[in-house]
Length: 224
Image (cartoon, rainbow, N blue to C red; front, side, top):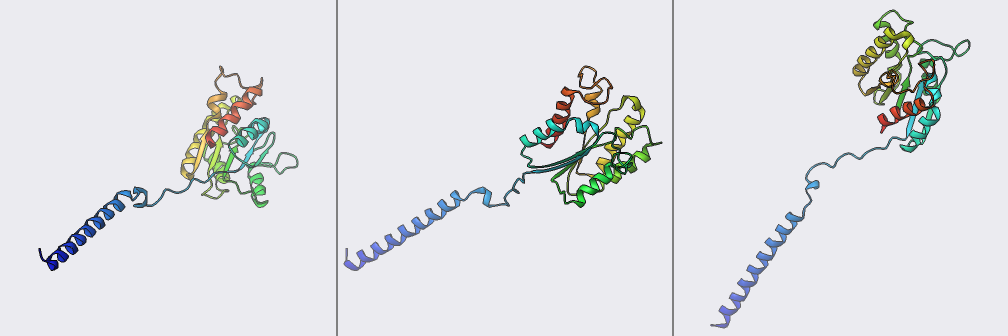
């Protein structure tokens, strides 16, 4: 073979080898490309650390176990305002406890801005209003106070002394929660009305020591 032909053949083989290597490298890059890079990444999970609650004597009795349960969930800013005989929209804080509406308004004005609001109100209101529309107005007033983006957890009521009003209130509460959106109703009624559970004091309304743990568990599980 002539020298010129040999040189040309070597050059052609080198070019061919370079082309094959380049092709293999491209295939390797394609195979190694993660599928996650093709679409948008999932949104990061934001931990909730701030909790605020307005309640009556049932919440007040359960304050210690509820606070402990919230801390176990990672809540570091906990603000719970609970008072005996508190009603939703009645009470100026003088002759009677400050109402739930005014309490929440005061908390918001003081800069309380939680990741989730909890409400446990209504036990002292059932039986004192004429119909479902009146209960709906009470519930709407309180549910409209937090920013719509902030979730609400509302614990329903059990008052055996006002059972018809209790059932109407709880029904309307669920209707109003669905209408608001971003709201969850927890059934204290189901737990407290179960005679086998034995979680109430002799008045059949307030939780006994075991009942306070059940109440705290009800709220904390919903948040978890």
